[in-house]
Amino acid sequence: MEGRESTARILRFFNSPPPNPTRLPLPTRFPYDEDLGRFVIGIAGPSCAGKSELARRLAHKLGARILPLDCYYRDLSHLPLDERCGMNFDVPEALDVPLLIQQLSLLAEGCEITRPVYDFRQHVRAPEPERVVPAEFIILEGLFALYWEEVRRRLALKVFVEAPPEVCLARRLERDVRERGRTPESVVEQYERTVRPMAERYILPTRALADVVVSGLAPIEESVACVLELIREEGRRPHTRVGGVR
Image (cartoon, rainbow, N blue to C red; front, top):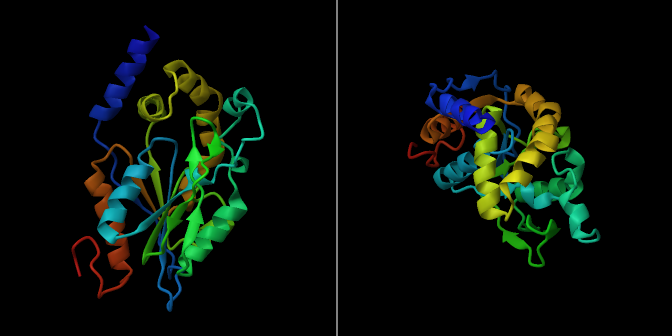
């Protein structure tokens, strides 16, 4: 009975018209370097709200590099696997913030980086890191993209993607079972134990720090168009194609 009720709630959310993007007052000037010209976009929101898809679509339009926050989880190889699986990955302390800030700054300065790759099945860093070359646009995407002030100072545009918890859980179930070798029971248990309560504590409050809030239920093309329009309005790179418009 509980499963059918949860499914019905999810379907009601999907069938309801999504809210329009919330446009918040923009800063008088986006913080980018006039000489280097790197433009850093931060995309935050709860787990499986739609951050990654928005980042991928924007990267395709802008020729941007994506820097996923998920790559910066701390290496837990010094712990037994059962202890790793029981760790709380939904708190800011779970990430290697100094390394993140260092590498984000290097990319923004036009320097190549070698970022870590995280193995979510074993909860360790993979032995082979990934080379990332800078681009005019850089997208930082992840739960805590708007959480740390030192990171926010490096962002030219701050985006928050919101979606109801029922929808986020349904998407997380599908993703973690398919991509991360999890059982449905373990996904639901983790969501109720840490994911949702930590989102309420750490992630949802960062919505107020965003320049724009988009719905993770809206057609992705609408959210992409909204972000691109903000970049156009700022007069960013009039000589460069942004979303097909000069």
